Image 1 (cartoon, each protein chain N blue to C red):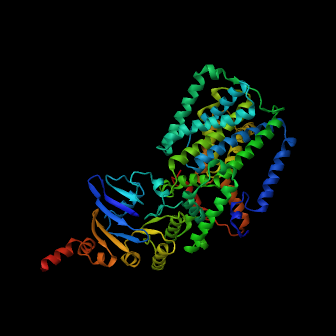
Image 2 (image 1 turned 120 degrees about the horizontal axis):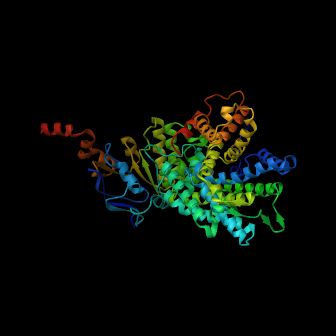
Image 3 (image 1 turned 60 degrees about the horizontal axis):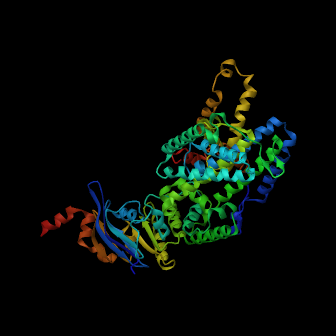
Length: 357
Length: 262
C-alpha cells in the first residue's frame, strides 16, 4: 500500500502523482515509439484508427463524460473537420494550417449547437444533437459545388513541410503526437477551474450556479472544446483514408463514439482510450473468430451492432465505471491484498447507475 | 449605503401566497435570523435571493445594487454564498474538490492559459488550495480532506457544504437550516462556528433555522414569518416573547383558549 504524504501544494498539482507514474508513462510512450517496428502494416493501420478515434472520443468524453451533456451528433463535428481540412488543402493550404482551422471551425459550429443545449438536457438534448447531425449530413450531400455531394472528395495524405505522412508507419507517429498533445490539453483543462466547473455542472447544476458558475458559458465551452477535438480527429481521418463522402459520417459513427466512452468508463480520459481501442478492435476480433463460430451466428447480419448493444447493456448493468473502472479495481485489489471486499466500490457503482447523466 | 435590503418582496405559487410584501434590512457584520413554522416562506426568501425564483413584486438590493433581476451565477459572484436545507454537494467528488469549486468566483485565468497550465494558473491553483486548507482547519475537516462526499454522514456533509460556502469568501452567507440532521454536539460546534464566521471572518450571516436555542444564541436580530407575512422583527428575546410568534408556533387553539379565559 502506498501512503500519500503531501508536503506542499505543488504535489497536488502535478500531472503525475508519483515519480513512478511518470516513469511508467514514459515507458509506455517509448514502447509505443518502437511498436511499429514490430508490427505489420495492417496492425499499424488499426493503431492509427485507434489514435484518430481516441482524439474524437476524448472530445466526446469532455462533453458527455465530464459535463454530462449527451450528444448523438458528433459525427457531424467529425464531418466538419474532415471537409474543412479537405477543402482547404485542395485549395493549396498547408496541412499544418488546415488542421487547427478544422478544429476551430468545428468548435464554432459547436458553440451554435451548444445554444439549444442550454435549455435541453438528457434525452431531449440527444435528440436535438442527432437532428443537427442529420442537417449537416443533408448539407454535405446537397451543397455539391463545395462538397461534391455523394461523389466525395479525394485528398492527399498529410504533409508538413518536406515530410509526407503517406505510409502507415509515418502516419502512426503523426497520430501519436497529436493524441499525446490532445491528452495533455484535456488533462490540463480538467485540473483547472474550467474542468472543475464542467464536472460541477454534471453533478449538480443548482450547486454549480450558487458557486458562481455560469451554466450557459461553461456548457458552451464544453461543446466548443468537444467539437474542437472531434474536428481535429475529423481532419486526421480525412487525410488518413484520403477519400471522404457523407456516408462516412452516419448516425452509427455518433453512436460508436458514445459506445466508446461508455464502455471505456464515463469520466476518465483513460477510459476514452480503452473504449476506443475496444470498439476498433471488436470487429477485427469478430473477423478472426468468425471461422470458428457456428453458421447461424456467423451468417447473421448486423453482428457488430448487436454486440455493441449487448456490451453497453452489460457494462451499464455490471460495470458502470467501464473498462477503466475494472482496471482501477484490479489495481486496488492487488494494492490492498487481501483486504478487498465485494462491497468496496458499491457506492461509486450506485452513483453511476443513478440518473445523473 | 445599505448592505442588504429586501423591499416588499412577493411571490406566489398558484393560489398560495408564499411571500407577501416582506421587507427587511441586514446591516454589515450581523447575524440575522429568520424563523417561522413550516411553510412560512423562509426557504422561499433564500431562493429569491439566489435567483432560483423570480419575484412578482418588490426588489432586492445588495450593496445598493439591485440583484433581483440578475442570473443566479451573477448573484453568487457578487459574494453571496449559500447552503441548502437538503444538501447540494458534488457528491462524487472529494471534500477538497468541493471546496476548490468554491473558489470559482476568484478565477482569473482564461481557457488558453488553462490548456497550457501556465504559471499564473499554477499560482492560482496554489492559492485556491491554500484557502481551502484554511477552511479545512477552521472547520476541523482534516480527516476527511480526500474522502468522497457521498460516503460521509449527513451531519458532516452539512459541514462540508458550509465549508464550500466559506471558501467562496462571501460577503453575505445564507445558511438554510444548518443544524437539521446534526446531533447535539455538532450543533454546539455549529453555534461556535457561526459566531466565529461573524467575528473572525467578518462575514454577514442570514440564517434560517428551526432550532430556537441556536437562533437565540447566535442571532443579533430575528425576523419571524408566518404564511409569507412578517409577524415580528427585533432582538431574539423580544421576538420569542411576541404573542403573534407564540400563536404561530403553538397554533390558533392556544389563542382560542386564551380568549375563552378572558
